[in-house]
Image (cartoon, rainbow, N blue to C red; front, side, top):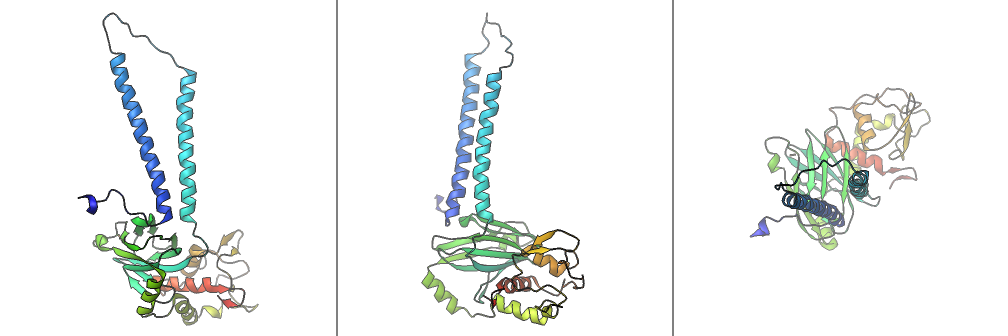
Length: 313
Ligand code: CUA
């Protein structure tokens, strides 16, 4: 009877087990104190009930007791904080050797681009045991990429590029949800993640027609939009070179610096004059309205592929 209504979603990543462990600990802790407090309440209500001939006495404070009931909860809270924080850091830090999957949310579907050029909608095929980095953006409103079995949940906010990751260690089919109300058909913005054995995955890849890879498509865009007119390696170029730019620290006009990450990348295209690299003029026009969100991810893929050691990786 409960097969269709499990209390907990399946756990298909190592991280899922760790998230659950913390959750179970919190539940057990709450249960322990609920029983302790209500038990004590009941016991004292009976033991110290009003009886004829017994006068109540006023009890004044006790330093020892107060230190105890402040100290113990403090230690427990700090323990939970430390546990939760290290888990949070793990969840938010994408491991370096990850396979890139690009996801664009739109009312009401998930559009997915594979590194080898395959595309899918509301379906995501991945190999088991491989770290997948999700680079995501939205075409319209806030969506939320949620795969309960992976304990992966990330808000996909318009105007931003967000990253998340997972490493599925169990072959199977898992629900993909949009977990942020995004309009009429929000409840239909669902899909399936297929975690496959390497061999099956390779077979799947070869069975789906591949278009340009995100890097190739981004490279083409870079040409079509004439980015290289200014962003080249000439000493007199009007914009900074993009070779090895991603991930580097960019000193800014007017002081300070930023890390060239997904956010800086996006802002620089949509609002170029906001953070101008030191030594350059704010001459770049905005490309707002000229690049779709999917193209934005392709350009990003291309920029990330530009390494200083001899061009593309
Ligand atoms: Cu997209 Cu809810």
